[in-house]
Image 1 (tube, rainbow, N blue to C red):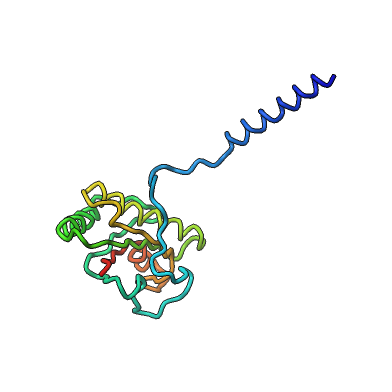
Image 2: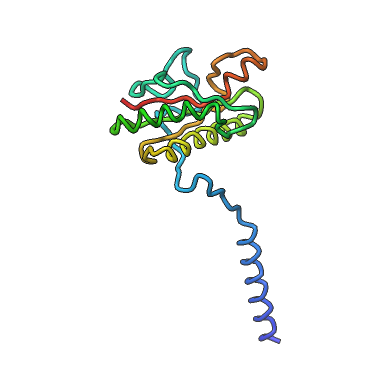
Length: 171
C-alpha cells in the first residue's frame, strides 16, 4: 500500500509539473532581447507641462517626422516606411548618436491597453530601423499611451494624429 501511495504521489507531482509548464504564459519573441526602456526617470504617468520635452532635457526632438498608425495597429505602413528610412539614413551617418522612440495612442482604450499599444508601435519602428541597418543598441523605446496627445480634441481627426511614434536624438 505504501509503495502504491508513493507512486500515486509521484504521478500527481509529475502531472502538476507538466500541466503548469504547459499553461505557463509564453511571451512573444517578436521583440526578443528587447527590454522596455525607462528614459527620463520620471514616472510615465506624471503629467508634463504643455510644450515640455517629454523625453527630457538631454534629448532633442522634432528632427524627424512622426510615424503615424492606423486604429488599433502597430504595423508601419508602406507610406510611413519612408519616414523610417530617412531616420535610418541619418542615424547611419551620425554613428555616435542614440535614438529614443516614443509610442503614443489615441484616447480610446484603457490606460493599460494604450500603454501596451504605444510600446508595440515604438518597437515596430525600432525593428524597422534595425532591419535598415541601425545598430539595436543605439535605439531605446518608451510608451506614453494616450498621454500627451498632439491634438486634445475627441474626434477622428485628433485621433489620427495622436496615433504615432516620435523620435528623439540623445544629445
